Amino acid sequence: MWSDLQERQAQLQLKINERDKYKRKLASLLEQLAEQQNKRDMLGKKLTKEQRDVQNLEQFSFMNLYRKWSGKMDEIREKEITEIAEIELKWNEAVKMAKDIEQDCQQVNQKISEAEWIGLDQKWQALMKEKEEWLRTHTEIERDLLEVVYQKRTNQETVIREIDEALSAGNRTISALRQASDHLDSAKSMSTWDTFFGGGFIVTAMKHNSLDQSEDAIHRAQVELRRFDTELQDVKNVVSQNVTVERGSFLTFADYFFDDIFSDWTIHSRITSSQENLEEATRKVTEICEALQSQLKELRAENIQTNEQIRGIIEG
Image (cartoon, rainbow, N blue to C red; front, side, top):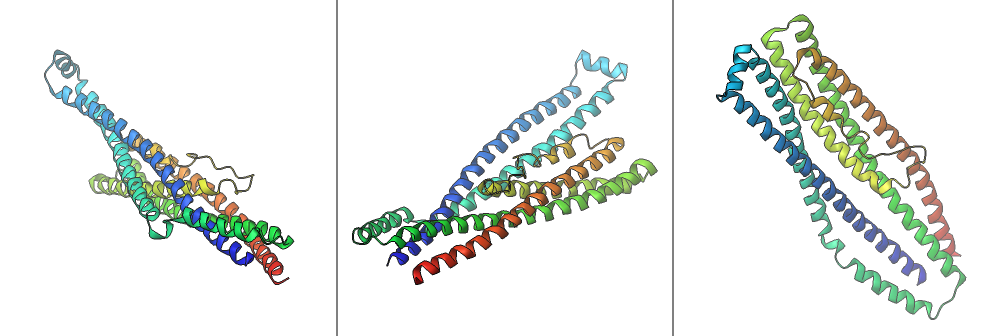
């Protein structure tokens, strides 16, 4: 009877732990969403201001007339348009990221609302009353030991599940990072030809098409990095002590890529730097996944021993 109560408690605890994990994930996503929306709005205001500056250049004023006479107008206009293009790229990325996070929030909300999570706390209270009734008439030594071991198993299985989910997210992240790196390789080849060998209009067009594809690939990598980071928050306490996981340490490489990519002479070095950032992010994610895999192997071995211990207590 007692082992049956403990088994029911263990299974119920796993469900409660999973529900609470989704609640923590939702809280984290809402925090990320607010941060991304603030960034989007800030860039939107900056973009509007820069657009007004360009419009002002087209309007008559004595200052603009002076700029035309002095030959400065084209230089100023080119500088302003370049700044707008850079801000617009970052704003587009922030808009896409905010939409992605909103979708993740909706999915987690939907998960929390599923029928299997309803009434868990009431079921827990009812089970505790059953245990209380049983305890009034039983005082076996095995009872106390069994309760401790069942709780140990529940904790192990909770962590195993969380690490499994983090590893899945990590593998998706590594794949997305490598795809982004491949796209940058293509853009870099086009940039080399166009910059140093004068590729002409067709090569220039192909280069910018490659950059557009790279932008999309980098966005997908950023999305997977963010999701991986969210999963890590639930397992950060069980990661090996010699592996540090700092939020944001590898989540912002896109900002550098989006800076100053319009000059033929700087684009080549920018792509090279972005590739280096991608490689560094891939290395860090791989290191974390290896640490998680090692921890998972240990936990699974411990979980087997715990199940054997439970069986030994029950069977006597």
